[in-house]
Each structure stands twice: as C-alpha cells, then as structure tokens.
Amino acid sequence: MRMRIKFLGAAGEVTGSCYVVKAGGEELMVDCGMFQGEGADEKNRNGLETDVSRLGAVVLTHAHLDHCGRLPLLVKQGFKGSIFTTPASRDLVEIVLLDAAKVAASNEDVEPIYSQAEVEQVLGMIKTVNYGEKVRVGGFDFELLDAGHILGSAMVDMRVKDGENWRRIVFSGDLGNEPSPIVGEIARPENAEIVVMESTYGNREHKERGEEVQLLERVCVEAEEKGGTVLMPAFSLERTQELLHIFDHLKKEGKVKESLPVFLDSPMAMRATAVFLKYPDYFNEQLEKHHSNDDPFDFPGLELVEGMGESKKINGRLGAKVIIAGSGMMSGGRIIFHAARWLPDEKTVLIITGYQAEGTLGREIVDGAKRVVILGREIEIKARVEEITTMSAHADRSQLLEWVEAIKGVKKVVLTHGEEVGRDGLEAGLENKVEVVKPEFNEEVEF
Image (cartoon, rainbow, N blue to C red; front, side, top):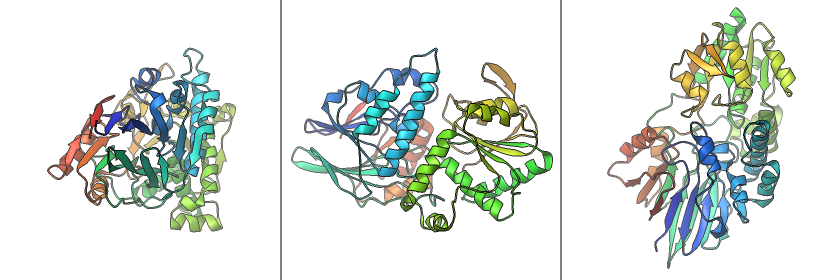
C-alpha cells in the first residue's frame, strides 16, 4: 500500500491542524491543533479518529492553539511517544496549554476536555530540536526550518520511507508575512514531491507593512484629543509583542504621548513576552540589535494588568487609553468585558489586528454587525471598527505562491488550513502547474 496522509483537521477551515502520515506500517503526526469557532467544542470532544498506538511521534510546527491544542486529548487516548518541536515553541506550548486547561476548568457548567495534569504529561513528552537539526523516527527523517510565522515556528521538511523508496514531503505549517518585525526570514526548501501547505489568505493580498504604524498613531492621537478608548483584541503570541514593539517606537519618537496609558490586560501575553525575551536568537537582525540595548516590548505608560480585579477597574477609567487584551478573535478572554463596556461609546475605536474565524464575535463585528450579544446582553456597536491586515502573521496569496513555486520537483500541492474561498483562490494560482488536492475532514488520501 502506498503512502497515505489522513487529515484530522484544518481541511476546509483554518483551525484544527492535524495530519497523520502513514507508510510502511508506521505513522507520524504533524500538529495536533484544537478547533475554534462554530461547532468547535463538539469536534474537539469527539477525539481524534486515529489509532494512537501506531503513532511513532508528533512533530509540532508551532505553539498556536489551533496547532497544539489537542495534544492533551492525544495523551488521553493513550499516546505515549515523543513530541518534537523547537525550544521556543516548547516554552510557549506550556503557556498556551496550561491557559487552555485553566479556562476549561473555570466553566462549571461544562466538563473540561482535559486537565492540567494531562498538560503536564504532554510537556514531559516534548523533545526540543533546533532549526536544521536532523531527526529520525523509524521510517521518517525530518528537520524543522524557520517558517517566519511566530517565535519558534517551523515548517517540516520530511523524508518518508515508502517501500523501497524515500519520498520527500514538506509541511508548511503557518508561513509568515514577510518581512516580520519580530522573527527571521521564511526558509525555502530546495525540493519536494508533495507540499502540504496552508491557504489562510490564499484568495487575498495584504497591504504593505507600515500602514499599521500610521493607523495606530492616528487613532491614539484621536483618542488623546477626544478622551476615547482604543480597544485591541490581540493574540498573546506574536501579535501582542508586535503591538508593544510598535508602541515602544511611537512613544520614544514622540508621535504618541508618553502619558497615554496602554493597558496590557493579558497575563498569558505577559508570560509569552518573557519567553520572547529569553530567545533573542529567533529575532530578526534589527530586533536583535534593539534588544541588545533596550527592552523592545516596554515603554513609558505601559501598565501590566494581572488580576481580574485590576482588569475590571480599567473600565472605570475615563479619558484616553489603549486596552490590549485577549482573545484575538474576541471568542473569550478579558477583551469581551471591555467590549461590552466600550463598544456602545462612539468615541471608541475597535482595531481588529488578525484573522477572525467563522462563528467568532470578532468575525461577526468585522462582517458589519451593529448589535451583538456579549455576556448574555445585547450590545449596540457605536464604536468605529478599523481592520489592519498588514499585521497578519500569515503569508498572503502572492507570498504563498512564491514560496511553493520556488520548491523544485513538486508534483502535488495539498491545500489545508484555509476556508474554501482561501483554498479556491490559491488553487486558481496553481492551475495547470501542479496537481492540487483539497482534502476533507477525516479524509485519508493516498499519494
């Protein structure tokens, strides 16, 4: 039987990345991500449709929840192998999974899908590997290469023993939006027969970087003049650090008043920022140089908010302010309390800084809703909504096509981690050049 890949998530949607490569009676999993958005809880609770006793190992591309969030469920199903990822990803995975377990345990009405103890089991299974370090697990050889997405993110360059032949597959993971203000350049694998790649923005082009800096300066100056609030839902990994770095420059260059309070209301983001500072070797050259002289994520007016009591007090603070809080898609976290308080205020500006999955509050607002339900109450949106696409940590259509077309010998491109519109857009760009495969959820494809 020829090599097969089973797609246990991110097939026609952006969340739940999880793929099992099967060849020669052996199996290896790439990523084990949680589903997010509409219908996600049921999918997560259903478990993974695979025999975990056959899995030799898991290779993890990076620490975002939609790539690592089901690892504890894999352990619950009996997985006892090793999980390979970069050192920075290992530290960030600890933060992400412990936070997910804590959030799950806080909901008394629903049984948590996994516990902190199961997260601890996962952490004990992780073996760290550096970029370019070759690893062999049975009939699988692989190395991790920089994906330029978030700190420690990787693509997987893999050789698979299929009968008498060794076949080469590249899993893109999530590819970054170059040039990144934080991490290094995206690696370009030399050759591969099969490329399994993300297609989040396969139908869209980003505007050039730099626009986000101008927009933040403009809305902050406006907030100072009107006494308004700038609300910024932000992912704790990478997006928050990028925002802090921008504010660091805006304040030190005198474009925004040092006295303007910027609340970082996310304990998870604070812990993640500490990990970033631990691994300056992952920074791009410019940020590494900045880091050698000064903390690039700290500046006058920054207020770190730890407890919920402190968080609630922010909403009693009148006057100009910026609130950065999770979650990035407004599907939970502290941002929803601030949204309920400040979205009905016409002096508020809500800045959407990243992808919003279907079924999330963020997506509902981006799609133009004038009334939304938050914490059981109907909230009228009088705030102005601004969307920044230049801050996306995902490559756009042109960048995705450029990356895959530079890989020699590609016969098949498998499009994952994208809604159908994204996959269709990227497929159109690849038309007549290679065979395109668009797998469905839980489908097993022979190659």
